[in-house]
Amino acid sequence: MITPLTPLDWKRRAVKYYPNKIAVIDEEKEFTYKEFAERADKLSVALHDAGVRQGDHVAVMLPNTHYMLESFYGICQLGAVMVPLNYRISASDMEYIINHSDAKMLIVDEEFAGSIEEIVDNLSLEQIVLVKVRGQQSTLEAIEFENFIDTVTDTTLPEVSLDENQLLTINYTSGTTSRPKGVMLTHRGNYLNAADFMYHLGVKHDDVYLHTLPMFHANGWGGVWAITAAGATHVCLRKVDPPVIFDLFEQHGITLLCGAPTVVNMLVNHPYSKEAIITTNPRMGTAGSPPAAALIQKAQDLLGLNMIHVYGLTETAPFILYCEWKNEFDAKTADEQATIKARQGIELAFNGETKVVRPDGKEVEWDGKELGEIVTRGNVVMKGYYKDPERTEEALKDGWFHTGDLAVTYPDGYIEIRDRAKDLIISGGENISSTEVEGVLYKHPDVLEVAVIAIPDEKWGEVPKAIIVLKPDAMVTEQEIISYCRDNMAHFKAPKSVAFVEDLPKTATGKLQKFRLREMYWDGAKKVN
Image 1 (cartoon, rainbow, N blue to C red):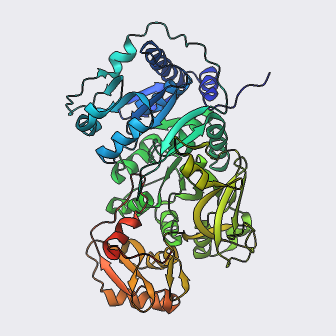
Image 2: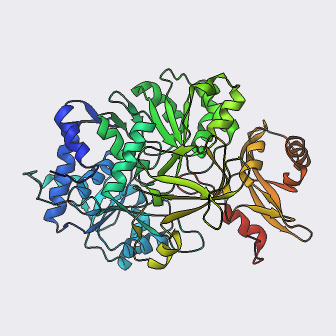
Image 3: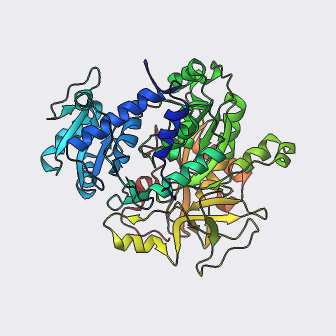
């Protein structure tokens, strides 16, 4: 009588109880849960007819469209493994990932087909399915998606015996100094992470969820499953465009969305934000990099967003912490509340155990001061890196997944990240948190975006440097920025120099790529940590 834990079962439930409810809105298209399920089932049968079997891998390179949602269900309910691709990476990385993942087929959006055209002769694919896009013209030898599924007349699914511990997806992390790693996530891990998403982001049947977060990123943090589980409505968004997002808030009554702090920053600083009228008081989950308290406060005060800070990694499906809000916090000032919301917080209900430890594995003091590494174990941790036992062994040590994030634990158990281990600045023997300095700079009225990195210094070994994107028409000097920091924090933590740039390098999910900034200044010199 035991059935496997799989998020795919939520599609069955949604069709059973909400067949005529709008499941997916994608620009001018709308699908009920019954229609959405029929399209996903057609895709399953078409894939099966094309030779895809349980355990086979299918790569998908699509933006946040109904095709992407259909792929998650259509591929995985066959017992096949979906490989969501980041469509913003280089063609050489795409070639590596598609071949390394042993993908048998590829489903690709025509807008991104150019990258595949460059490498198609080097790919070991059996077939390509192309989603046609208005205004695009691809030369790929491929079958068009609608034609592919329209060949199906009988949507009876082949019998598949699912094991909750088998792979559901392989999600590749962004490569930095080495090749991307394929994170193996199971049915069980995705199910329990999506349960955390539902419970801690308060997903309800009447929610209308805007997919601002790329679905390829850790399976939309679990949103691709959790929204269906509640029978709520998915609203697709092809690309992050603040005016479009503001219009969708009112057009569809958006009540929930997720995004990296970069997306939050885009929303609060876009000129349209001053005119936007948002009556739904949406909840917004944010994660990806530590958000500055000032940014959270702006999002809440200016746009009325109810910010929920979550934390995790692709390797943990991804949620392992969230900043639980307590009634006692309501009596604090707005600034104090924003500071609390900037903390990563406490364990979620279903993910397992997370703590901050010293190098010897013992937990740090709960004093908000002692620095250690965040480690976790439990239901959502990856099975390992695909075909990479060496890096799997490095990450999964002594029964714990080591995140590489340095943090403190406060007396109430709330964890707060101070830095990535590789981003920590060690100046004259003193540890300086780059995120702490960034948090101060985000309060400066002229700063739009900022990254703080270590640069070499003859006297101190390394010192902090601030790299800043200013707001339009801002007029501020390097010395004024340095003085501002010295007035608001310990002098040794203040940047010793400042560079003003037009933009900062980021991943497709909005994470700062500080390694690319450091490369400009270290030029072969060895960083202290």
